[in-house]
Length: 232
Image (cartoon, rainbow, N blue to C red; front, side):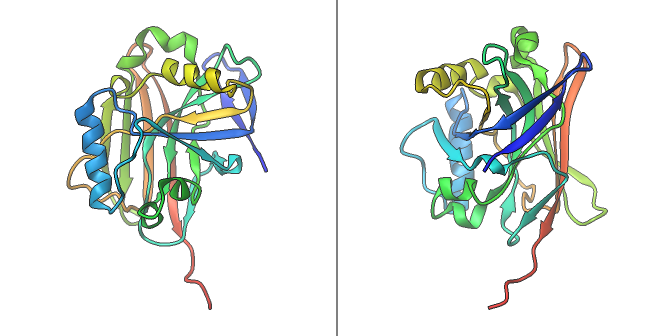
């Protein structure tokens, strides 16, 4: 199964991409203290440290979605603010968009790859051509906010420049080496550390990429919809 995404570009054009391969990167901080902070974050939730850094998890392509509601089976799921590389018809001209990898934290303690396949990867409706922002990409800021309750105030839960993460060029090389730099590939970047003291098990998430050079932003937002308790 696949899914089709549509992205609006700043010039007013749109690009449609049929997702055939979806990948979630993990533990992708350039600074080792950032990686250690994220590993410690997950350790508090019972997730063992990875054997290889950075990691890369294949995810079912139909889990890539542009939605405003994410269903969740229980209360221990949360998002992760990320950017996403989107390879369209021309692999030499990939797109960059905002993304949120919604993850089942209860399942994560049994297997990170399993947890990544248990919920949606939400992507924004807008995108930028990577070539147009490559010269100042590290200055672009990635932020996430959570909301508790239907009318609760937003709380900042993640905030970092893209310089904190491995750059898209690193992952383009990985994709090329593996023969995956082809139309339909989508790769999520991995995330940055959560702000201490903020409850990530929220009722809503909002994520933003802000470009201080062009003063443009890409954003997404969704509510977390708890499914009814199972019968039987």
